[in-house]
Image (cartoon, rainbow, N blue to C red):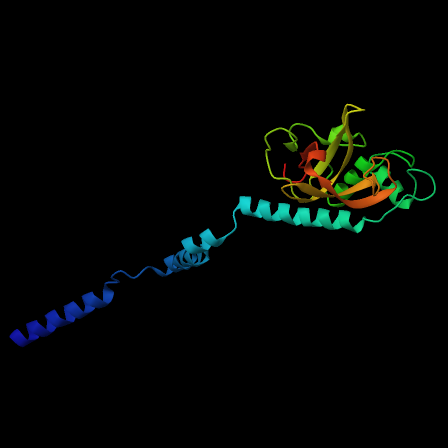
Length: 218
């Protein structure tokens, strides 16, 4: 009788153990578990997040790339000369077209406009009138004033003419050093005239530069 009781108790325990699911999830919950695991796998680790470039970093990289493109464009134009009459020729015609003018007009500012436009920079508000390139919001350097930034290749410089009482010649900064600036400018010549015959790469003393404007990063 005792043996029979023990056997029956053992069978009861065995049946109870088999029917108890313990901590196992129901079958219908397995897909959600897989989804949660996939989310964990796809989420970047803190280290990976820190290695991703920030929006500021990307903006700086983009700006540097644009400066390289602008520089390459204006350097390619060095040596372009007027053909035939003053302020005429195939190259001068395309520069002036960028500011809505035909041949025959002074074109130093038109050259700047054309180069920037070729690189997707419309320079809204700036035109064939040299002073239009120097609104206060764009100026980073002005002679005898505290500089807001360091001029870089692709920035626009202006030369002030006392006879006209305004900036009357513009071009591009290529290099900026302690004492001088290397420039690329249109409608000039070897003597540095504002009524020249072509696109030249020149070396000017910094004291000749009245203002510099940044149309790339602003």
